[in-house]
Image 1 (cartoon, rainbow, N blue to C red):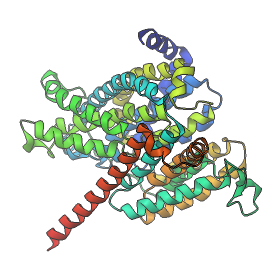
Image 2 (tube, rainbow, N blue to C red):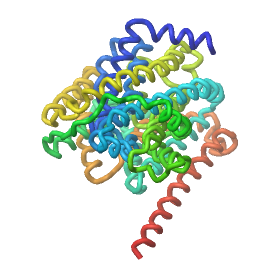
Image 3 (cartoon, rainbow, N blue to C red):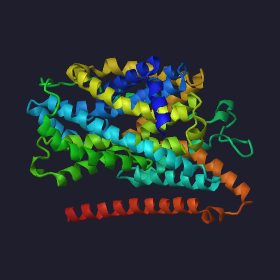
Image 4 (tube, rainbow, N blue to C red):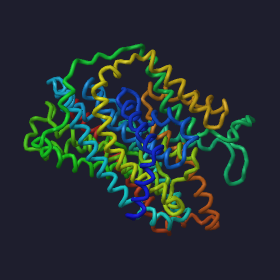
Length: 499
């Protein structure tokens, strides 16, 4: 492993690779800091650049956007009390009170240190876990892949938030979308209504651009033009001193492992991990009464968990082709543009790409620290960019990105159509993550279901006779059961409070 990793570092430090990796990290920090935007949108905006790049160059740039955006969300959370990304929500609980005390620099510095600790822990886990999981995945039968896809689809319920019914409806719509086009088994047209363009179905990346990027543009525009007011802050005293560092290092490490564990579970993401890490840090603290008033542990722990999910989310994406969260689902689509197919064979056929990612993820953490702290000095001005300037630029880049997928206006039309659908989903509180899971996992489930039944001569017991498939089916049932139980329990608790 060590020779491969050293080769990965040699690849990463090639001039063009390092330049684009740095560029991706900077873009990620800025995108993450702008409220309403996210790492997935950052990847979408840079899709036109991906075509002209080498595979390893494109991948380290995408990883830079991913990690940078996770930290960037903390900047607006601390300065504005508005998290740039959902996973930065817990950071504002102590970050903003500290900024009100005139210590925004200390809060941002603590967030950066926590993010680096979380990122490095997640890199170590990614390097140790992913190759071993890939070896296991090489033994997968088509029935096992179908059960794995079924497990991923079962997460639609848990990723739906409080309204499970709306989440399942969105997921079912995503599954329906994935069936439009040509049947992979018999080659017949499905739901095309005589339109030849629909024979290729709805391209996944065009759907993702619409649901994640254009829908946000439409939502922001509907909200009207606004300019954010940022108070004057002391953004010079960044780094925690030795006493403060000793205070935050253990909560940060614990938060990092929580983030890795949550990130490996497909469909979860940082928003869940950060609150778990925050609660654990509060229980570990000798001064729990300081939480909510500017406790450094309350910033370091969730930020470490936040960036800990990055390496964790890459584990299922790289080894199984199952996105760990919404950002990796967009990244998964971007990989297809450069001819990279995630899965266990990637570790066998292209170890150079895998270890370039591993090495790049390590280097990105230190780039994120440097440029994150530099950005904090200009963040108050950047965050004041009004909507009427920012949104048209994003709209133009989204359209260019959609067109560049295949140089066809059809892809632009699909992106705009799903942007409108995503806008109404946001308006009526339908989550977008289940729809994306349906779009991505639907074809995987269908293809492997057909193949498994062909090999077993239509014997459905194949899914229960194989241990791996049976394990995933049981996990799917447990996941759905836990979700419904938690929602029912929450409903009873609220009813009890009202009574």
